[in-house]
Amino acid sequence: MRREWLSLPTRTVDRTRLAATGIGSLAMLMQLGQLGNALRSAEFTRLAGAALILLVVLTVRAQHRGRTSWWTVPVIPVLVAVAAAGLRDPLAGTSLAIATLIVCSLYDTTRRWLARVAGALVAMPAAVAVSPDVVSQAASWHSATVLGLLPQILLMGVLTRAFYAGLIRQERAGARDAALVRAGRELLAATGGEQIRQAGEGTAEELVRLHPGVALLIVYRDADGLTIGFPAGAPAELTGQRLTGPVPDPAELAELAPGFPDWQVDPLGAEPETAPVLMAVGGRRRVPADLVDAFRSLSYQVMLADEANRARAELDHRAHHDHLTGLPNRAKFLRAAGAAVAGSGPVALLTIDLDGFKRINDEHGHAAGDELLVAVAGRIAAAAGERGLAARFGGDEFALLLTGFAAEAEVSELARGLCADLGVPVGLATGPVRVGASVGVALAEPGISVTDLMRHADLAMYAAKAGGKNRVVRYGVTEPIAV
Figure (cartoon, rainbow, N blue to C red):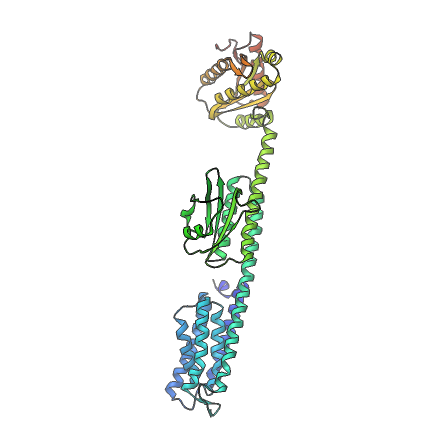
């Protein structure tokens, strides 16, 4: 705890605030030796000293809390006037006005800063009005000597505020760039649409937190029009809100999100009337162009990541699925079967070979043959349900992996039903056709490999063909399963 208390701030703005507080407090404390105005009583001198100490306390308090309080706006000018009036030369109190103005300018809102500048400009004439003895000479509060200090105070206040605003902008820009870099890394590593969405929305909310008074809306277009899909910095109730017109209307957005009168709509590189995704950035005042660019950059990153993810998924699907039927191919099926065999649950494997497919292919043509294969694949996939995995190995060869069944009889019953279902005529563009299926069934046993399981199922399927086709044979069982 002690080491943490002694550690220096990491942010440039915080280090600047700490340095300003330290130097300003030292400058004010050095005025303690100047207390004792000839026109004021000893009691007033003590009061002036207390006011000076309180000014130091308030500046340190602002640095400790990281913000100023509204009540210090009228209090600090009074304390400056009292402390300066107690000095041997009240004009030396200019350092008090400047020091407090500089420190507080690093924390104030714009309105509070303007009020504080006005208070500092009033404090020094008030101090001279109370103690007009300036360097052993009488001076009025409106003399050239006194009024000549006011532009200096004003200049220091303006310069400090401009310096502070520049630091804030620089720090926000750095934080904004860092957020976009992190988003880029997260989006590159994302492996699904949900991860992409979370990375994009999280970064958008971070950018909104960095820039209070700003809101972002992501608007999607569908067949029915425009819908707000994601709000950041705006009421969450806007999610799902339908918009009128082909392009988001800034006036309508201002009505839906009270407090954000200024909106900028960007179609993200597409035509506004047809863009599938649009971005709307709103603010309590005009949003700076660099911030709009940051939101636009984030939107592009998310869109590119989404496109890359879809392309990656498409390539993966093509690499592991049959291009005609959409079923998993041999490689994907065997990986799933290997994982199932390595597990602890029951596993069954069915190999399926169509009977009479070559005849239909020759008589009706390859297009009809492809149409038949698609229909057969649909029936096998339907039989697999949620506890099975269907695959096409090539040609008219299919396979079915079953897990999670309670009894072996369930496998036999499913195989019997599948064989019968594959024998039902299929309506093709050229007319109805009928094929049969020879089905081999093998059940996994302890210590068996997926290669052995596959070989057992193939042997059972060959036995089904040799026994007359259109039947089901289970490996290790001599009698075929009746269809």
